[in-house]
Length: 208
Picture 1: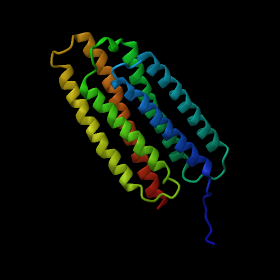
Picture 2: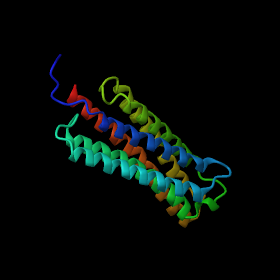
Picture 3: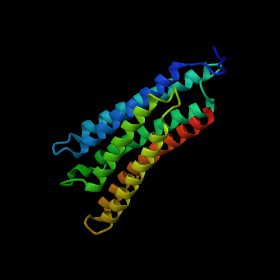
Picture 4: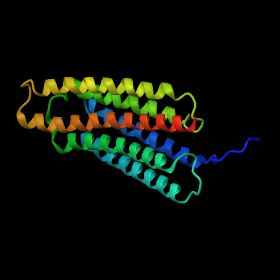
């Protein structure tokens, strides 16, 4: 049997999977903004709860790193991956909360491009959660980061088109400022998912 320098510590992979599944929950809740009878206060409240769950998972991961002598891969990469997964959730929660706090629910509908960005985030979350099941083996991950990059490009396009719409004169200046902040959080979430994928690509390269 070949000697393995690094242990097969399943707890880390379980925590990464839990964090990614939490992102799926958050993105699904955020997508309820597109429902005709959306309960915005409930959406915002549930996103806060999921964000707290994400924080708890991240703290559990950090404690695990600090109490483990030899980790499955570099400690710095474990910290970074855990932090970036948490960043994704922070931006999802912020976007939902701002829609509620800014009273944007008084609009007849939110811009179509905003819903397109939320759908991109839904897809990114699902793809990320699926990829976590392959993290332990470090195999067949290239299609994951390629797909995340493709989705992020789609999110960028929707974001640019949203900005064009916001500054077209369709909305009053104060509404534009409010929706721009929401759009920025959605765009930051798209970027955060790509940062997760880039980190996993780096880890896979180191471990290959």
